[in-house]
Image (cartoon, rainbow, N blue to C red):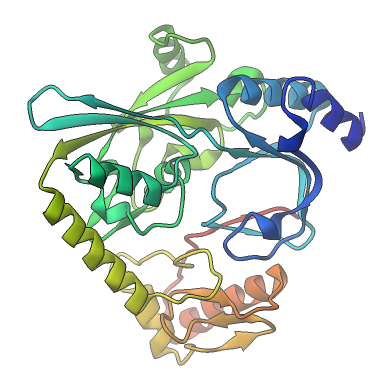
Length: 331
């Protein structure tokens, strides 16, 4: 099948207004750059996701899963195959095991800022650190997003996901072996859906088991507490003020590089005299050297060239090999 025919197959079970042919990814990333996806689908529920997987497998087409596009850089030639934007937006709040605890089941497509506001209205604390992170729950869990001394691993109880290997979509291995996966699946209420505990998600700094793309995150259960609404609001306001003062307001994908074990990456970049350095429309932010920003007319290649230049200069002058925090997708 050609891409048009695949789109027609997809729309047999997915509303046509959710399926796009040759969709510019610049419309779906916070960097505002990137070429087109062959096929772009907004996925509202698990049945739609299963249909996409079925069609992709039938036609030997690759699936790329995205969320809010806030931590990715799509190359200028775009993405081949199907790009599935997960928009699962259910939120279910339940009392926990004790009078002051609460569990919150959150769809992978829920924006962190939206969730933080809902939790504030309910007087639920523990999620304030994520209130200003521009992403969705699925993306935040995948990269173990964090701020102000807390990370997703501190609040995640478990995560439900689809294991693509069971559809023979990919062959990568990871450190959950097949026997363990089978045992997890046996405990699941739905076929092909597994639920991983906090420990099984292998959270480390800005990474988790989900980075190998074997799994598609569906829903995450958070363990939080009831608290004082005024204190929650004050904390969120404080974090918001800090972000506005320290972080650039030009298009970016958040912090471009990971923090080092024994150094602050932005400080190294600054000390190398790279603050404000520009290639095409890409710039090392003048406000925060840890961010690369789009000044208005950047291409993905401009950004990649600047990333390479910064990494090279930092290594040349300090001997430190800095690593990307953002994910690069496409051709």
